[in-house]
Length: 264
Image 1: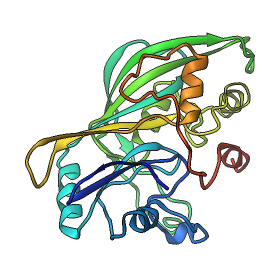
Image 2: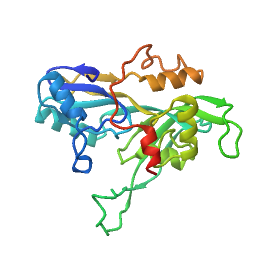
Image 3: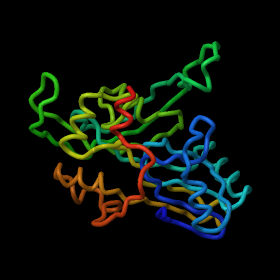
Image 4: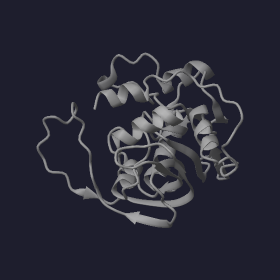
């Protein structure tokens, strides 16, 4: 059972667990459980996607309950009318607040795009970030005798593939658990010592105008147990009151951080 965090006669939103695919893909033919089919079975009607969240990312996933609703939501996302807020744990101390306008070249898929030879032009990519808290822990990694982490709020203005992950890596503050753009040794240390066995990126909130009623709508997704354990260990409890919680039953993820790091 997935956690339904919003539902009316037009829309439904769930708190997507880390490790779950949004929908079936020929690239992942062996996956038997995905969000769309699970929600369909859970509420007894078809759902229509309007946006996606990366497989290792958790948080708000909004869907339409009709093709028209899905289309209207997709148009709002494309027009940048929906504000997205994420939270992440990153390597190092990031304490300032700023906007990063750093174009990104579209990432090619190793399988789907293996025959593509056309050069890709960099596309505009804008992310806003704000440091919320820092911690230093006595865990040796490489030539350092301690590790430093920061809790960061992120708001992407554009929606490029892996935008937040790539932007944080560009700032030399990669997101913990990012096996593609992050620091493998830091990821392993965070998994071993602090239980961060996943990408520490959470889609916390969507704010928008309801496509049918015209009323303001804000949808918030609570943190999972891995996140709650981390912020407790790092002394950050109380900093995210809208999404912190005491208990959370995790659906079984479809993959885990350990399996991801071994494939690198």
